[in-house]
Length: 320
Figure 1 (cartoon, rainbow, N blue to C red):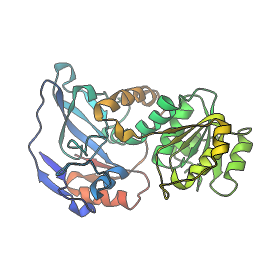
Figure 2: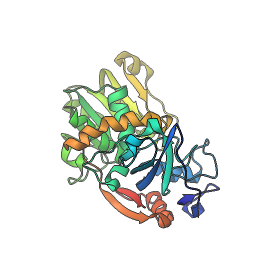
Figure 3: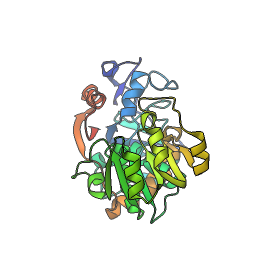
């Protein structure tokens, strides 16, 4: 089979278009013919050496959509989708014509989505669901502030929160594009500046129930300032600042709950129940797939990675 592989860490130039043995199924694993796979910023970081546990040589790629071609009879021909913090790092990933995954990782993709659309869901929506639903237990009627609402993860959080009947305050440097799901769905927009905390507290009568901070680092203290007493703050990143300071007295007087979320800790099998939980939202139209900005053939994966590294707006996918 054709695949992308890297044998050393570096820029997209280290990626090679190679022939590798086609994987086969066994009692515990199925083989999926990959129809489309997205390229995430974390995929580019993986190739550059950001993740110490990546084992070389390796085929990268976390998100995918495809068709089961080997495995249990009831799964043959099924259209499936998935993601995982292990594929592309400790097991070969999705930027290949075929991938072998555990039977427990099989999740039927929404019929309403094309393979391209389905392949662009995984990482962003899993970390969004994990933070809002699994950890913060966001409930209907609550107010959530989403820092970085215009980004991939932030936009997914906005959609999930609105689908659960919540009020959403979008916090970002720029107002999310009105044509995007986040731009259409946020109830209020607050810019990031010296008045952010004051404005959000005014809009939420003293503080929101949940803050989902997809930026972290430089925005951490701001995130803590937005939440009401006994509110929940979700952190997934550390942009611009790994070590942070905050007022400990204010923190414990407010009884703030601080929750860290790392979807990379979920392997492809552990991520499957979350992917399955998302199906209903996409089938009903309550959730919408992100826009596909660029498409590349597998042999042009270097260009796909270069586009993601350059910060392309919208999703980049590799089609087989």
